[in-house]
Amino acid sequence: MKKVSVSVCPVPSEQLPINEYQELKGSWPFHWVTLAWPQYLRKLAWVWGWSWLIFAPVAAASFSPQQAPVQFVLSAGAGSSLILTLVVLRLYLGWWYIRSRLNSPTVFYEESGWYDGQTWPKTPEFVVQDRLILNHQVRPLLDRLRQTFYGLGTILAIGGSIWIGYNGAIAG
Image (cartoon, rainbow, N blue to C red):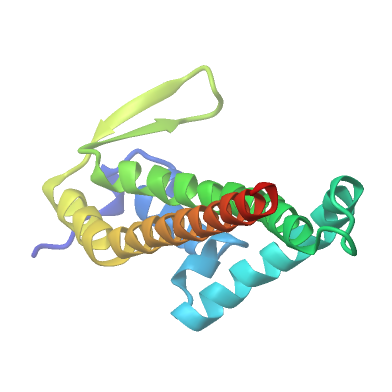
């Protein structure tokens, strides 16, 4: 592959997709997705735990922990899962944006402000470089986030089934 001069690219350095990828990869909390599974899950558990501390008093106002412990735990857990789902959604949207920037054959950029946007068609070298990063770095992260959504959905479905089963047993 021949050397590509950066001078052929009019896009400001900070708006190049590869640099946006590097910046997102190192930023908080987006770098969580790049961690090994145990560390990644620990971060998500940390968010869920702090959210549970916020939602537990709300759940306690509806279901007394002494009189309805199952409903209390499930409702606090559902509220906490809502916050966790929003965090995972934010991570997914950030990585999806980088995916679209790397996948596009052109780069939209702003020279000095919002009013002077330009489009630059990527050279074949830039396209190959961006697609390699997309396929080997970003897609696995998006797959991990999708798996996280599936896991959250499964946990919420199990919690909902327990709720229905428990309330059905009480009513019957």
